[in-house]
Length: 482
Picture 1 (cartoon, helix red, strand yellow):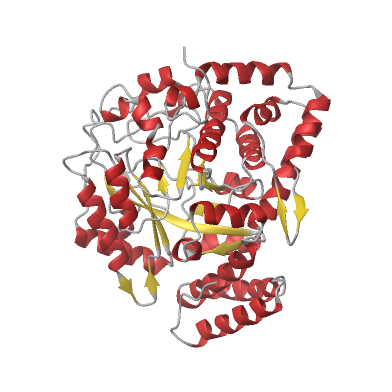
Picture 2 (spheres, one colour):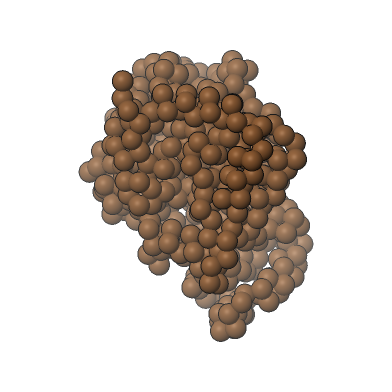
């Protein structure tokens, strides 16, 4: 039997089954242990340090106790603490992005995904470079600056060369005042050599969802194809970092396995990356199983209520305070609104999960990976965020200024990142308002920017940001950044 070792490079040792079971037993035994719960909450609170704040975060075992706790007033305390931590690290900014599906050809047999090889009635499609260019222009015309590219695993149809060429195409499209400034990549686990190629292509974050950390469930859910190899998949982030990719994004598909097990595994993976590479995950995504072609979510008996989903998000935010958290348009407007304050720092807007969907007038459903619950336009989402006191940010500055990996984390953990992020958010929002927004959104946005400029603590930074915003308003100059 393997022993638990967060510094090991072997999946069965850093995501150790016995350690997770022991953690869940400990959490169950202590879920009403008030002195322990209070001490865990106290450890997680932000502490002022210089101009910023510092949060210690929690171990997977401490966080599991909070997740198991069923005392209503303590749950409310967790929600309040999550809000406090979110504000301390990310302020009221929400980063915007969109997924871009390049190809739904796939050789895997994942039972929860409509791209699985046995699904013969989904329309299979792979974008040509010209089609990618058209999709990018459509996304730029909405106002997007950051994409996450997605493709099924198919060495023949979607080789690494195709992905690399597609990234080059995306970065090459300059349409009116539009540019995609950051391409994140969500493709299958691959080799160190291929991760090096992705790094050289200028990607932002490499994202790979574990789907489930429970090995037996994983093997059953991925019966055929290269993804069946649990160890190769689980150890992918170490290969990515060895290949020079600074920022990696984790995630599980909640609903495939018991949420307590997934929660512990997710945090153990974050601890492992920190222990081995000195840098935890740049992002954590929290998708839930949703309806899609050939997929009925009711088949999976581990579905989560909205209340439990909120609690999981709050506990992740408390445990890994420095990590960006992403929620997609899988979730409804109501759910997305509820979790923004509890820890979410990035959301997609106006997403189409079909291959070639952005150039279609009507939302196509025949090649979607999952049903989209939030079907609003980007302008509607931006307006809604501002109505609720959030700054929609199209910023990609850290990536392009070299503030990635440990450099980003050291700034983030000290709270100093706010000195860059707040003005950058306001300047990129100004770009959006001038170039793409409706009249109503524009009016609301400029009122918000005036208020938010006053909150920039450094007088010199505030003056530069104000001047840059005026330049954006009155010229075609774009892409100012701190």
